[in-house]
Every structure is written in structure tokens, then in C-alpha cells.
Amino acid sequence: MTALVTVESLSHRFGQALALDAVSLTIQPGSYTVLLGPSGSGKTTLLSILGGFLQPTSGRVLIKGADCTTMAPAKRPTATVFQDYALFPHMSVGSNVAFGLRMKGVPKAERLAKAAAMLKLVGLDQAFEKKPHQLSGGQRQRVALARALVVEPAVLLLDEPLGALDLKLRRQMQDELKAIQKRIGTAFVHVTHDQEEAMALADHIVVMNHGRIEDQGLAERVYGRPATRFAATFMGESTIVPGHIEANGQIRTPLGSFNALGEAPGTDVYVAVRPEHVTLGGGIRATVKDVVYQGSFKRVTAALIDAPGFTLLARLPADAAVTIDGSISLGVNSDKLIVLKN
Amino acid sequence: MTRIISTLYAAAIYGFIFLPVAVLVLFSFQGTLFPIPPFNGPSLRWYAAVLGDARLTAGLANSVLVAVTTSALATLLGFLSAWGFARFHLPASALLRGLITLPLTVSYLIIGMGLLIFFNWIGLPKSLIAAGIGHVVINLPLCFAIIYSQMGEHQANIERAARDLGAKEWQVLVMITAPMLWPALFASFFLSMTFSWDEFVISFLLTRFDTTLPVEIWNLLRAGLNPKTNAVGSLVFGVSIVLAVVFEFVAFRKRSQ
Image 1 (cartoon, rainbow over the protein chains, first blue to last red):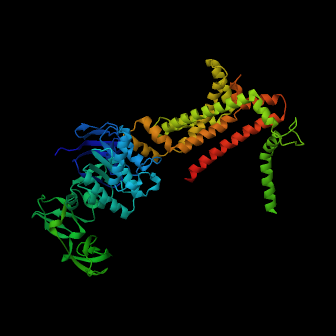
Image 2 (image 1 turned 90 degrees about the vertical axis):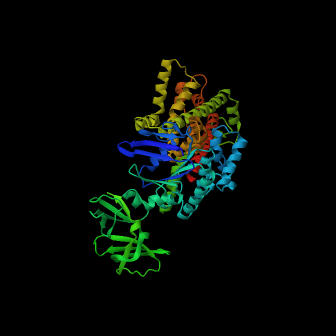
Image 3 (image 1 turned 135 degrees about the vertical axis):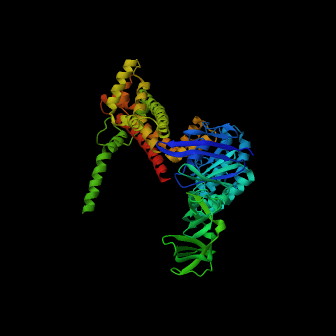
């Protein structure tokens, strides 16, 4: 499959600060890519460069094989959904959605029909005549989506599109975004700092930090086998402990020794354990420090007795008998250990 | 006791401000030849005299023409310069913004004299056009300041969205930026009208045969007081009030949104 978008060693400086550091990335047709990272990680800078709002200091952007690096936003086959929606406040919802077609010289009757169809797709067919200020935040979000999609972009860029919505609405919109993306088959590139949102939406997750891509791939892979320590901590919770590979091929850690899979003896590594891979009963003796009842499970923080100063985060069954300051023995599913190179 | 004193004080202040105007308006309805007590009226004979005076009606028409065209021009130029300063990184932006608003602090007399000397030098004769240019000079800084204050980053994003959807730069200005800013544009236009309408010094210095109403009133006053000056003065005052109310309404509406 040929890539729809190819980003070649893109760098961008804001004055002295390096916002993007030689980032390379490919985006497949019809995929849902999520750029995930904390603020300042460069994810929004990357999106702005894809949209043409920012010229990179160096590197290239190819869309459908054509070099778009210096092409104006209007000329390139992308459309952007802005974080604050950026709807035209003086125009009706219908005119907002039809604007892009109007700029392309599409006749009035045709563009209004297309706008109405697109509003129907996002579930807002009743709002055609309304003004943006008469709509709720979630509805404005849909209008912004319809306005960008109606021009049939090859790539739709979404800049923290759900950031301004409350949690319940965010989860609902997230499902709808995914459904709409699957229905129309346009490639979406979505920026967020919410890892749950990223996992729910993405075919391809790109974890970014300090202007670099830390890890990218399927959500299951990035969560289950993160490539770096940052990716492991940013994507979900985990306990990270130092480890040392012994001559006999075992990793010695404060949690005990485990089989190391193909790591060279003598190296120092980190080992990450997801809370759901910690089981009740096993060789690790600990004291319960904190219990948070979450309904379907208990989130337990336990201090290791044999390795003072280390704690282990566990997700235990809701009916597990654990009390604060009580003793507990825990086990770790060694197949699921994540070994991170130092 | 304090209440009575403060009420009297307030009455004195408002009396000080408005009594001269009230007297002017009252004696514009005088039935006899002199605008002095006792009041004989009311009568509209002096308003009829104003409207029958060809020089005054010509001055009125000139004033309206100058006020409307110069305000439109000042608003347009103010809008474009505000947009330029708000949307582009210019070298020494703060200094240039200061320079563009500087005429607000310079007296009309100095501006008028400067323009008179300059127009003399380039060979532009005294005329309504010369006075009109003067009115643009005094009103442009005001329009710029009002419109610039209303341009924010949120609107910049909206303009970006329009560009992303294929709008050319002039289409962004005409279809997006100007409509979003219409309260500020409208307010600038009416405030400019208010200032242009009763501006005297610059019009006096820069016009000769065709001139504006305030200059015609001054010509009339040189012949001595009569209720006709009161009548035309009341007309000028009335129009100023209407313009000021429209401006207040627009500006207030903007704030309450």
C-alpha cells in the first residue's frame, strides 16, 4: 500500500526551541492516526505543518506523492478542524458548511444540497438555518467537522477536537468520530493528550515527546510493548523498576528475577509492569499502602517488603480482601513484562 | 443634608454644561429679531430662514458629503491598518502603532496648518477635498484604535479556517474579517461622522469658496447675533446628538453581547 502522507525528517524551531526534531512518519489511506503527547511535545506543530499553517525549518511533507511542504493551506488536499472550532459567527450553519464549496465555485443549489447532506451525516440536519452561537459545544464541533469534510479532503486534520467538551460528551463524540471516519473512509489525523481517547480512536498511534516520535504503531502494540520508557508511562499506568541482565540470562529486579528475552547479559534495563498483570498470590511480599475501589476492580498500591523504597501498582479483583497496612503477596505475569532499554 | 448639597452640586454641574445649549436651542424658537430675553415664541421663522439661505444649505450639503466620505475612508483605512498590525509580524510594530495614533494628541490647529503648508507646496488648492483629507487624518487614528482593539487571536483562527477552505486573501477580508468586526466598523464610522460634522479649525483653514456648515456659521456670526445662528446651531447640535447616540448604541450593544 502506498502511503497517503509521507513526512520526511521534519524539524521546526521556534526561536531557540526545537519543537520538532527530525520527525518521519507515514500515514496510510483510510487510516485513523492519533498524535499523542503532552503539551510541548510537538504534536500540534506537526499538525500545523501538515495543514500548511507553518513552514518547517527543514524536512518535507509529501501528500499523494506531491511535495506540499511550502504549499498554501488552500491549495493542499487537507482540511482542518480547529480546537476552538473557528466557525464563522456571522453565517448560518448551512453557509458555514457550504463555504469551502462556495470558494471552489460550486453553484449555489449544489453546494447547499451537499452541505445539507453533510450536516445529516454528522446528525445536525435540523440546524441548517441556525447561527453558531445558538448551538451547544458538541453541535459546534459537528458543524466544524461537516465544514471540513464537505470539501472532500484527502486528509482531515483535527486539532484536539474534543478538548473543549465535558467527559461524557467527549466519549460520545469520540465514538461518532470513529464511525464517521469508517463510513467516509477519509484519513484522519487527530491530535490529543488524552491517552484513552487515543486508544479508542486510533488505527495508528504516534506517541510524541520533546519533538520526537517515541513510539508508533497499533494501539495494542504500543500499550502492550511500548518502545520507550516515556511511551510506557504516557500510555496507561505501570510500575517501572530498574533491572540488570545477569550472565545466566535472567533479569534481576526488585520484583524478583525473570527470564530475559534476547537481551545481552550485563546491560542495565528498566522493567515495566501494567497493573492488570499483577496477580494476587505469588512470591512478592508487600504492604498495602493505598486502596481505591473503582467498581469493577480495586486499584492497589503496595510497598515491597524485600526491596524498600519500591512500590507496585496492581489492579486486583473487586472482591479481593485487602486492607491498608495489611500484608499481601503478589505475583507478576512474567510473559507480560515490558523490558525497556535504558 | 449631604443629600441636598450633593443634589444641588449635581444640578449646578449639569446646569453649567447644558444651560448654554438649552438657551441656544430655546432662542432658536424666538419670534422676534434678537436672541435675547424676553422669549417670544415659539416660532419656526428662523428655521425657515436657515433653510431659505442658499449658503447655509450648501454648507449643510457639503458637511454631510465630507462627513460621510471621510468617515467611510477613515474606517476603511483604519480597518486595513488594524488588520495589518494584528495579523502580520511587522518590524518595530509597537513604534509604528504609536505613530499611527499620534495625530490624536496633536491639536487640530497644528494638523490644519501643517496640511495647509504641505498642500500649498504640492499645489493642491484650498477646497473640500483638502479639508476632507484633513478629516481623514484626524479620524484615521481613532478608527484604527477602535478596530485594532477588537481584533483577537480567536478571529485569526477563523480567518485561518477560511483560508484553509480555499478563500483568497481579499475574500477573507470581505467575507469573514469585516462582517465579524462590523460593530467596531460601524462605531468607528459614526464616531468619525460626529467629529467631522462639527469640525471647524481644519475646514476653516483648508476651504475657500465651497465650505462646510461650521465655517458658514462662523461667517454668519461675524455679522452679529440673530436667532438664525441659534437655529442653525441647534440643527448642528441635533445631528451631533443623533450620531453620538447611534455610536453609543453600537458600542454598548457590542459590550453587552
